[in-house]
Amino acid sequence: MSGFVEKPEPLQVPGLVHLHTGKVRDLYQNEAGDLVMVASDRISAFDWVLRTEIPDKGRVLTQLSLWWFDQLADLAPNHVLSTELPPGAPADWAGRTLICKSLRMMPVECVARGYLTGSGLTEYNASRTVCGLALPEGLTDGSELPAPIFTPATKAAVGEHDENVSYEEVARQVGAESAAQLRQATLAVYSRARDIARARGIILADTKFEFGYESSEDGETLILADEVLTPDSSRFWPADRWEPGHAQPSFDKQFVRDWLTSPESGWVRADEQPPPPLPQHVTDATRAKYIEAYERLTSLSWA
Ligand SMILES: Nc1ncnc2c1ncn2[C@@H]1O[C@H](COP(=O)(O)OP(=O)(O)OP(=O)(O)O)[C@@H](O)[C@H]1O
Ligand SMILES: [Mg+2]
Image (cartoon, rainbow, N blue to C red):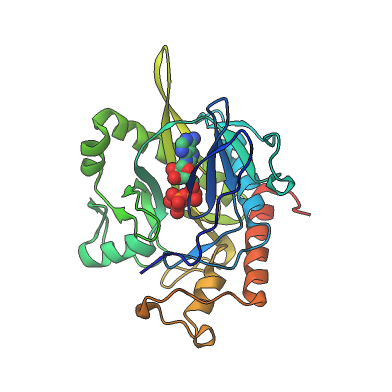
């Protein structure tokens, strides 16, 4: 079992139609037909959306995505139309609400990896491949790959695991031309972001993008959507502590995962019961990690 420990009720805002409650974001449509994407402070771990929120997480993710969209603007058009609050929206939506182009989304998690870990490492250990791509011998947890690779996954429903798929499977699902565009855009954006992060002492080990198509008279344009290059969608490692051969320290939910799997939490993942609420020291440490990632990447102060 997995999913929401407690599914939040959508807010009623005049002029907005609630479309979807995602793991982290709530989606609405405004009267112009645009998408209103509100990032909550929710956090998920082990396929559960926990009942405890991380204060400021929604604003950190939103502000970091906006910063990255700017860095990438010449490389990839993005879906952001405005950061203005819809009239009548709660004041606490400020800083975590984006008005976006409503796109025809591609049902593919576009993952780029420059380093080996996670599900990539598991597949590599079994077959010396990742998403069917052959890799050299001798790589270990945290190794840099000879070149970044596109390792797509299917988009799973809340509570289910995304599943790695081959490039050929993506081409079957979305067509050869779109698959080629997705791979090209994913690797181009990853490479730019990796270099920017590296100059700030952070290794971008891997990341996930979502793209959609915008239609106009001239045809369809591929647009970078969703959130980008946040600790929820990426593995960021402090470069000065990078040491292949074991799990790397990272700027994300590591405290949450470590606490949930520690005896202190009393939670046993295999029992398939919802995880318990997080104690304050875990939410404090996690909030600090998200803010540290924001500050180190942007060189801006959060406060
Ligand atoms: N411009 C857009 N047009 C239409 N849908 C979008 C756009 N940008 C993002 N989305 C969708 O909005 C949702 C964002 O919600 P959220 O981040 O909570 O996602 P999720 O899919 O539930 O979880 P996860 O991010 O872990 O896959 C996603 O379903 C995403 O595909
Ligand atoms: Mg998402």
